[in-house]
Image 1: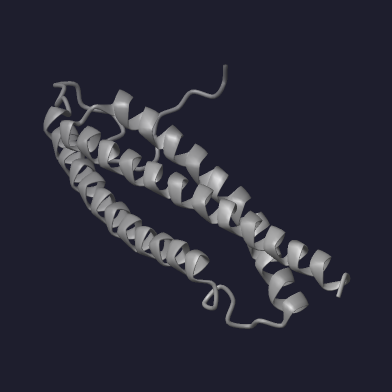
Image 2: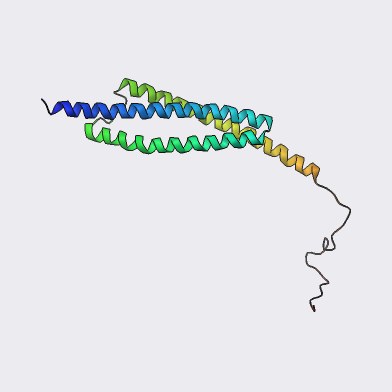
Length: 157
């Protein structure tokens, strides 16, 4: 009877830790989504300074998410192995709700990233055409324009 109490406390501690990690992951994903929205507005405004700042923030958030994932995956695996619950966290309503919200955020973020990528590609095409228009046609012709190899070179020194 006494041996069950620490096991339950240990199990609850793992669940609490996972819950905290999932909540942290959810808040980072929410912040990531906000940064993507700001990044989109910077893309539409063609403001490269803001865009650069938002990309750096997004990279920082990505590193934080990867660090959290490095803790969540082994902890989930440990829990499933130790307590023989292969469908975990489906049997835990609070963790399942948070995990469902996280998955919804991930799909939303994927769509936002794809949209930002489209906008960035459009901007890139626009900039390339602008550069083509700006190219200066100078009146001086190259001596080597017709010939691929130079014909008259003095190498005697």
